[in-house]
Length: 142
Image (cartoon, rainbow, N blue to C red; front, side, top):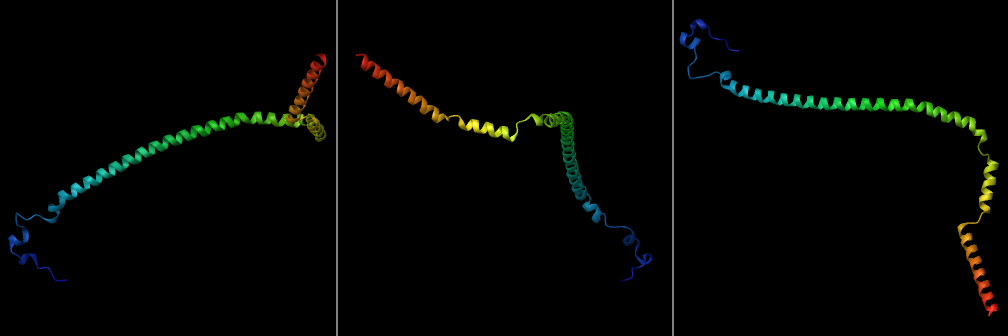
């Protein structure tokens, strides 16, 4: 590095003052920097406001979820005695339910009953026989 000249050897006007029309780098860029910072501050404020709104909606959703879960817990607590009643009923009433033998008897009785098609055919046969007998009776009566 080069040695700096000693100040006492420089002329007074050169050492102490700068020309009046010349501004320093900081003076020239201060306005632009302030403008840019104001824009940045505005963007930051908008971002903070957006985050605040998002936080508020998230808090509301969380409150709704908490209320809903509390309601579900209350319903489940109310269901526990009813489930216990159902379990108790099935334990005490199970011996009175039908056995396999009872179910087989009922199944065989159901299988012995006529089907709908069999009932329709039987009705048609009876109606046909009745019609034939009436026709035969009317011919004999003449």
